[in-house]
Length: 333
Image (cartoon, rainbow, N blue to C red; front, side, top):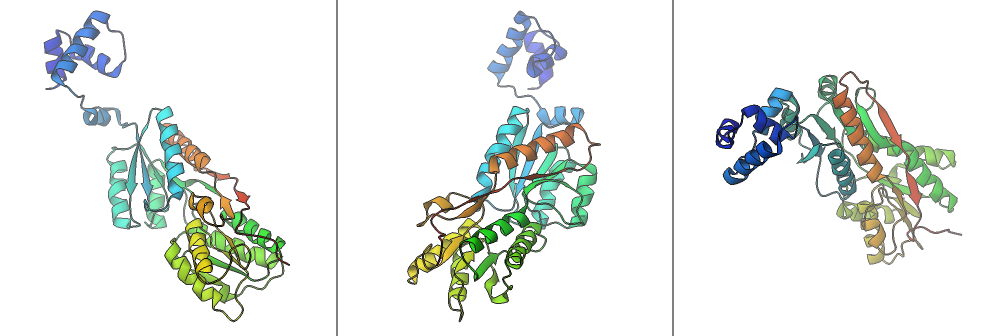
């Protein structure tokens, strides 16, 4: 069954069937009803692939995620879909598992016009590859921005300032021994920025940086649990631990409870992202909140703008973060 057969069975032209399918142009109610009846009876589905090749437009956006295990992405994705659909775009989700080869396979969808643009969370392909893509195709980085090697549009928060603000807050509570848990993925500029914010916060307070207080671990409560064990066995353990993700903070809190410490009393704990786990631990976690709904909205709107105007210059959008104080931190004497 093809469009020509629908036209024959309905006694109309191919052009009339096309106008009915695309809801465009003028078609008499009688002819429209005949075409729609044939489509319903035959179960005909338009060949959108062929149409997309002709129009060079798929009305689809690809959102590439490194993992589905991080709950931080969920609210952003919901916002992405909402604002994409409001602008007549569909959203396809791709999970890359931080594998550059998988990323390259998904980018093929952009090159072959199966999607009109890509929104990417934390790719692992090289800066040179990213630059080649952004020079020719609509691409937006969400929740990260490249260093001087990358020329791409982005939407994110100021991670350095956010980390600095948390350290300043812990200092204001009276802490001088502040540890930090950060990631160790190559090329993740936001991790570099958060480390810089941590160091600047200490320096501004006149607190020397101590290597033994800065540990790298994955985004999981299990690795954070092990890192907390290392920290609390130091000759001079920290009085506050800035975990730089809420999952890590939850692992630290679990360790403290299981080893005779009271989080928020004996040792303060801070996280990052304000995901659901930050509210359901005991005590709830003091954290940096990222504006997830706004991140998704601005990233999608920026991507659509790039699609509509290919000559548009790359643009960076920095959104405001906020610090949410909860029970995992307290004032010390």
